[in-house]
Length: 93
Image 1 (cartoon, rainbow, N blue to C red):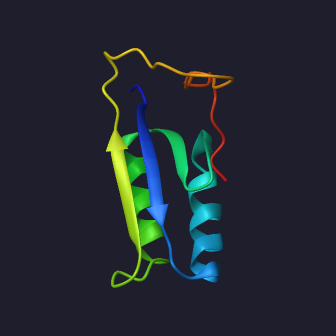
Image 2 (image 1 turned 30 degrees about the vertical axis):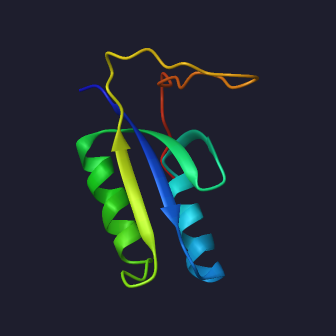
């Protein structure tokens, strides 16, 4: 089964929830910056990531966005950016 590239972006209003969300997403991220992360995910990993974030966010104040990128499209980067790459192995944690 191949992994699918997602951009996971969030806007968390409280510093403690923000720190918790960052820790959760970084466990799955291979790249990104600030509050947008590149995550290569299997369906089960996507479900676990969503479940873990659901437990942290305040649904009345925070927002999380999962964007599945089309694997047929070649990424375009500018400046010193590196294109996203699916690693040969992946450690979640």
